[in-house]
Length: 454
Image (tube, rainbow, N blue to C red; front, side):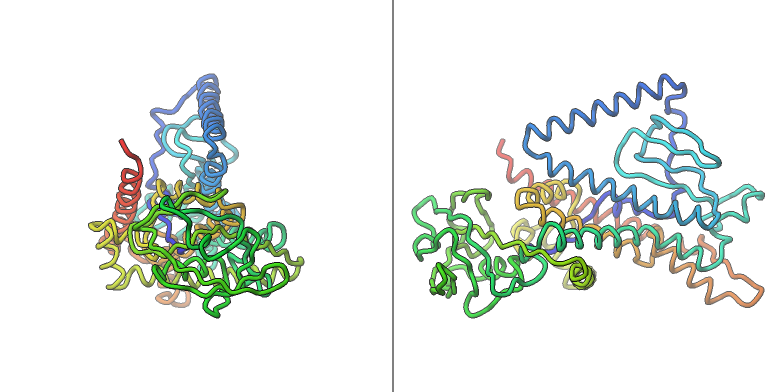
């Protein structure tokens, strides 16, 4: 699976402490308890209808993944909320959703509630910067008046939550679900062939070469691959070439030599439990479905493997982000916007909109629980790292300001940064994020239109 950065609602409208810009829509909120109860009932009916339709349409798991991502955003905000409360900073609002208020209650100085559009959540922390006007009586409890370590803890809390979620999901895979070679190598076990597909014009290369269901692939061209993803990518990179497979069958190792076909030029039927493969660029295809064995690990070994996998995913995310902002990456991304074939290349790396995310969630759910959990892992690590980019309005921008103020401050003389001087950079950052979101949406809608035949 190609690691794909994801442009979620949270990255398109960056999550983090600067929540004073969110509209509260008080004028359109239900005012009486009866109106609030009726609004909540309507919302529950809509949610129930979505669940029923998704189950009937056999996309229940994909919908559950989308719901998990929305919950992830709420937990991001909960991280900011908890750290601000622990620091004694005044928090005036914590809402799930956006738009008109459906239901709320006040506990102490904070209003909690639900809004009409279940697209995440937000928390309002007072006095995030010097441009915000605050009641003088509340000034000592603003974010901007807190010591350095308090401000840092609040700013990084959201990304910390994402990293903790990713660690928990990785541990769940190693300890409970089992790794089928998607994360780490499965030495000596190989990946099992669970199905064979044919070409519309006749047998597939797998059938011609004599592959059987139950065969275990040990190596290809003498290479033992660390993951199913690497093996699949190797086959795709060799259209029209003969590959040497070492296959374990009945306690013996046999060698099979299929010649791959270019799936962009031929059509294949779907094997059991898999969709028919397609491609628009030269892509190697043999015609089998792989079912790697699930490896479970002990409690303490799972901790070790979780740490290693987290570091690996983090490094790959940094590498992908670095590649996207390079001159070559920007040029490739621009080419994808005007050239559909470039965007359809299996090795292409680009941002994904909520529309594309739904497609990825559906694909992951069809491939099994580990794929689904790894998609959530990749999203959490990406969003956690992306949100730490040191530019406002991202959380990393507040970290950068806190560090800058600490460097400029002197004993008994606290330095306060003037955010108004940073506004051109803020506008530029928002414009770039908006472009990423809109361009990702364009690419995903273009793919959707190409698939749907009217």
